[in-house]
View (cartoon, rainbow, N blue to C red):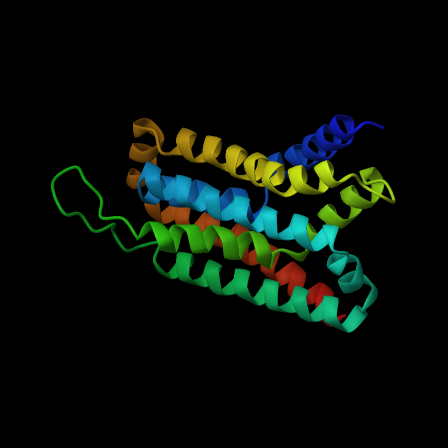
Length: 209
């Protein structure tokens, strides 16, 4: 297989994985709705940075090591689940709180760094994403990948992950979706909190069996 074929095979498979609904999709959607377009894009960059980290770990074989060392993988899964439950609790508790406004028709947003960090932390907190990366890399990467493939893959993964979530952020930061969200904020936030909490509880229960 040529380098480009391998590269696009990995990126295409990762893109389909990113497009499936999960905690990352829920979080970016909520940040884009509740804050500004810039915040949504910052969260998307955080998701891309998480994908970049996973790709580097997969290339260095650390994710494979994580899967082989059972107690370490369970510890990571437990920590990720607890983080998602904590995040869900914060969102649920703030569901009834109106968004602060600094002027008529404007919403005071959280910092771009916080949006970036929330995106990055949520991406990294899901150990299933690490398993997906390990599986895809194991299937498509040759035993001795070329230097060009090793150099191209991590930044390309970043672009795919960040690009998809940037599209999500742009879609949900538009005026009409934002207006609907502000009108039904309590129920949207509770739904987001419930989804993240359910994923977190599932991770925790899997890790303590």
